[in-house]
Length: 73
Image 1 (cartoon, one colour):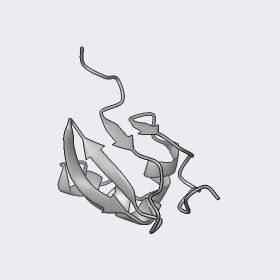
Image 2 (cartoon, rainbow, N blue to C red; image 1 turned 180 degrees about the vertical axis):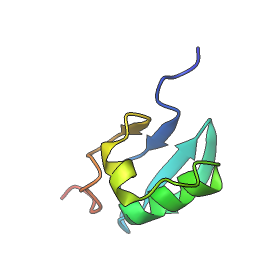
Image 3 (tube, rainbow, N blue to C red; image 1 turned 90 degrees about the vertical axis):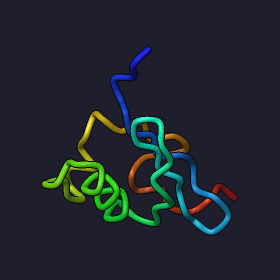
């Protein structure tokens, strides 16, 4: 089954980084929406910026939305 949200941003880890998976491949750890945008640009969405990341329906935010970058207490 193909997901309608090909980008998954996982919950923050102990360092505040969030793993990013694009089309089934881990792209790396993001520490901000800017990092997520950079991963998406590398994946071919060259015009994606931070505001696109915040508004995009392509992203499945797990453990909090684009404003969450610290682990739960």
